View 1 (cartoon, rainbow, N blue to C red):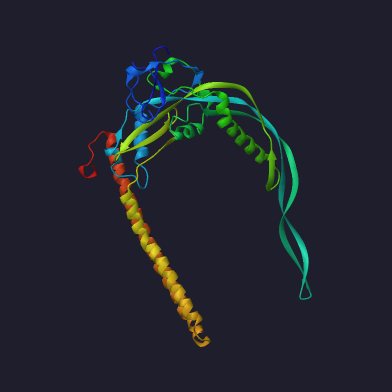
View 2: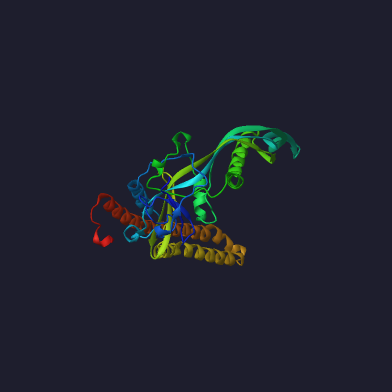
Length: 377
């Protein structure tokens, strides 16, 4: 760890710890290039205890990224050929692992759904009827269980706000944790622990523990439903561990705008980010939906007109409207509406399917290393 240096990005303000000899000199959050000469020797205030090692390679991530980018109804067809990517580099993010137990008391009104029979007299005849009701009864109890909560320890005031929410939703398996060794972090940037464990617990950890406690209580409340739930909760930590969690945080540019993509570095299931939107295709879809909206407007106006005519007719003519005009009108409206709806939906489906097919063709060419057809470039 002695060769590590720390620098603050001039563009977004993020602080990163990196090894000038082996690591890429660009900010993971905004893509700005570092001036390595301005970096200072790192003085880690909090040393990591354990970490989740990277198990997704850069090549695997890039392939997953391309697949993710190629999806979406309104993603531009040239998203894969026109995007400009910054350097792809993994990043270790700081987290606190809180392990302990919670306990508390709760009280609520439990509702039990019941059905009872009762007798009524109608036209001098006795009839038995049934009615449903909820029988509310007081209930209470205690709750106690263990927790293992992971919470982000980076400075959310400097880093993008979406980073904290992404990391705080992280799932983990304690068996994958490894004791911290510098060899695991070689070739990756590191975000320092900027917040102490007490502040992180109050802002994030305690809320997660409360959610666990509330979910536990709800499973314990008897009856079919409940109301007026009141509870308290006490938490006791067994240990607090400083953890580094791996992630790929990549910037890319499309159409002159910057976009971010986040993915866990130890599992490929969780990937989040922004895709650009093809506004021209959005407008085409809206145009293809117009016949449906037009149909409902015309149907409403026509129905109103027919009802207005009907209300001003004498009783002699109303019978004809009820037996002939109304049935024919509603049948024609049903047939016409069905045809309009099917044609419009089919056109929209074809438009979106053709776009996805073009993107999939480009994706396959990039994965196979073959040339992309000229008409798709």
